[in-house]
Amino acid sequence: MTDVDAIRIAFDEGSLTTLRIVLGLILLGVALDTRVTDFRRAIRRPWAILVAVFAQFLVLPAITFVLTLLLDLRGSLALGLILVACCPPGNVSNILTHRAGGDVAMSVSMTSVGNVLAIFLMPANVAFWGSLHPTGRDLLREIELSPLSMLAEILLVIGLPFVVGIYLSHRFPRFAGKARRVVGPVATLGLAAVIVVGVANNWAIFTAYIGLVVVAVFVHDALALLLGYAIGLAARLPEGSVKASTFEVGIRNAGLGLLLVFSFFDGLGGMALVAAWWGIWDIVAGLAVAAVWKRRTGVSPEVGAAVA
Image (tube, rainbow, N blue to C red; front, side, top):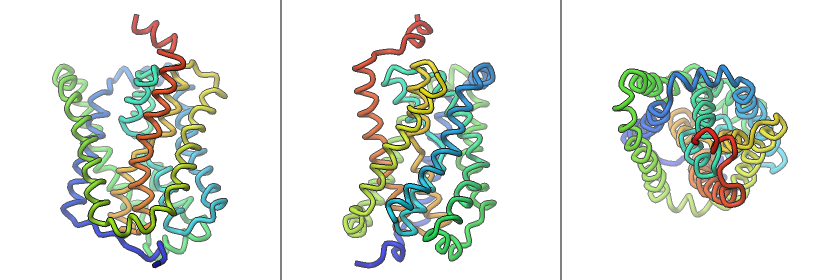
């Protein structure tokens, strides 16, 4: 079997354009669900936001780096996990927080702040941790990754839709309220379709190497969810905010990672497999955690009081 670091997965320009559009719609959906008051809420409750940001952009990439060393992963697989760990959360985290009976308003605030910061922190994080990895750094040298080029791509896919969505939400709240009910679900289904088609077109590669990916993604995803939960508890956040932080840290926008793999890493096999499987497993695990949590604790007290 060919070394996973040597494989390249095909993804044509049309598929890349479709993926960009779908990801832009996902971020537009997040922004349409965001109000200026969410940022004001974040300013009034900075501790909860700082906890989520600290976990997402500092602790999770560091834990991921250590995990790749402990599992002795090949370079492309290690870079795939690092890339996903550096991705921001998507609107799936808000949905799962709602399903778990958590503080959705806080979740939306965390997602909004996290996506804005990711525009600048993600390229730096990927370049930093990737360059430190003993097997991944050689691949980065071959690819000659440019953090500035990645920043431009992230600005296009995250920044522009986010600004447009915030504007629409502020100026036309009634329209934004109706649009977000359509945009979010359509974009999520679109991303699922892109991943399914991509896997189907590369089925032989997927089945040959997925065994290398399953365990690493399972452990990594579990650690991300556990980190969000543990840091929320350690910071003594209310129960609803702990649920929010769990999914904000544990749920990553792996679709964005997949786009960056094909845009900047030449479809590097191990990275593409990790991002694709993460995007699938992350939702499955998140739904399971949310269902168990809601059944055991119901709606968190402070959330129920706010609704009442």
